[in-house]
Image 1 (cartoon, rainbow, N blue to C red):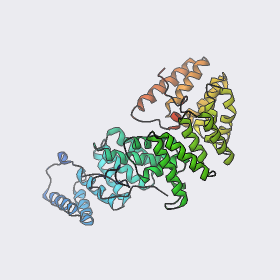
Image 2: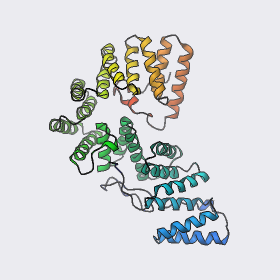
Image 3: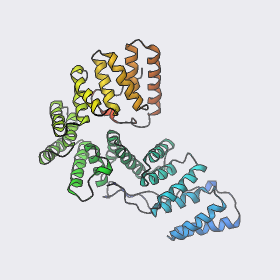
Image 4: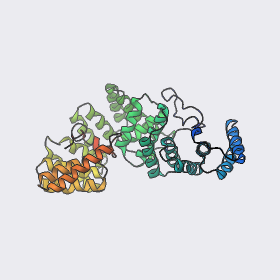
Length: 405
């Protein structure tokens, strides 16, 4: 199941997400009038007819006219924009993506065009390309429209869910809720993030499982609105009714961590491990609770997590921190190096690695690691960590942002 925005014609204004039960797509026409150049009468005639057909909702005719006009002048940016938006409305995502790529060839710093290309790639399940183009949209900026920004954020969160980057998805969704965006689509995404479900693995719309995902998302939404008492009571009731729902105890434990009830949170994580002995995240949360209080006691659980899922970078990161805090720098360095190798974009990995190198007397390595940390922190100033788990693995301790060295 892919949770999507229903699409309306792109020329319509985005509806108010705080009012509508659904999230709608983009936007008004994008003007390139300043780029128009006097042209032969054939092109002018075709362009005028294409615009008139578009305004009269004769969209199939408009598509053919835009294509003919663009064959005469491929640098007509407004034409590529209009063609791309019409094709997107018609669910013709591949030719729409082609149109936006042609536009970007002439206007490579057009953030709104990058966003539209990313939305096409999202529909085509070209997730890496979609993430890249949404990042470009954020870098270059999009039209000044809060609702358009919400479209970007929602799809960014869904792409992170598709990748299994649940903490990163939750970080983006937190921004949406903070801006007053409430809908079943947002709650479904919140529920998938809390239960660590990728969209392709989520229950089908209308099923009992989907209803449970929505309930979890609604509770997460309550918590994000700082209604933590209500959220805690709702989670407790849901857990009692569905004690075997995968990751429900983990999700409840995460909420309890936020209320500073670490003992109750650990009990939920332990129950999750009992239900699912291969659960890596519950082990890491328990191990993280020992960090800087009894780090040595957390090492066995973190080591189990690494053995169960050796390709998960945050297991190596936490295990390295626990070793380092226990005075075992010899074992800390390889774990931190592996975390940085797996996710070379994560600044905090290099901060911890620089500290470990410094303690080992490896001054040049420490200097390089810290320089990398500073560079990555600077590059990431406009947004969250590449992988939000590094910020949230231990909410009160490991997750705190380190000071620059």
